[in-house]
Image (cartoon, rainbow, N blue to C red; front, side, top):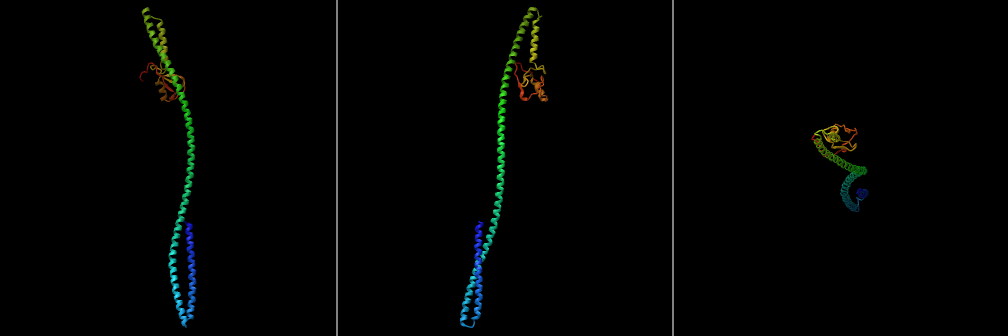
Length: 262
């Protein structure tokens, strides 16, 4: 658009220069005609020539006026074109600034894209490591559950044996009482064995509670109250072997006889 305006302005300036030359030549001819009029006043021929010259001058004046009437709107049009040219130059400057800002933003977007891709890759690696850890933890939990079930089965067997022994003890005690008149020697041994077995099933800290909680790290059993008291006091060590433990390593064991309410 600016190139077309420049071409149009140059053509208009050329036409103006041509018309100025024409006006200069007309002025020269006008001066020559004046000289001829002064020399030809005496003769009729000179008068005729003067009339012709006057007519020529009139026509020249009309042509000059017409040229002026044509040149003035051309000047106005040129001024308008110059104003539009200045506006277009300002718009071009704005477009160049906008292009530069767009390039800067595009570079920033590429940088952000690269950082995000790097973060996504790092997140994928973290997710893979977390999945591996979760798989390992699930396998460990399965092992713990199997161990827990085996231990629960052992404890139930012991409880059943204790109950059967107690029943046999009662029967033997009743037989001894009936045979010896209430003074039996074998009954005392059985009672001692039962006391030792009961002591093994009692919590070493709270003797009135049964062992219903196991620490998977050291495999020592206590009552849940003893373990949770240590955990809440931040003394997170086994009461028996003083080995540290976490919340995940506290597992419940369901005995035949439940604990009394705490």
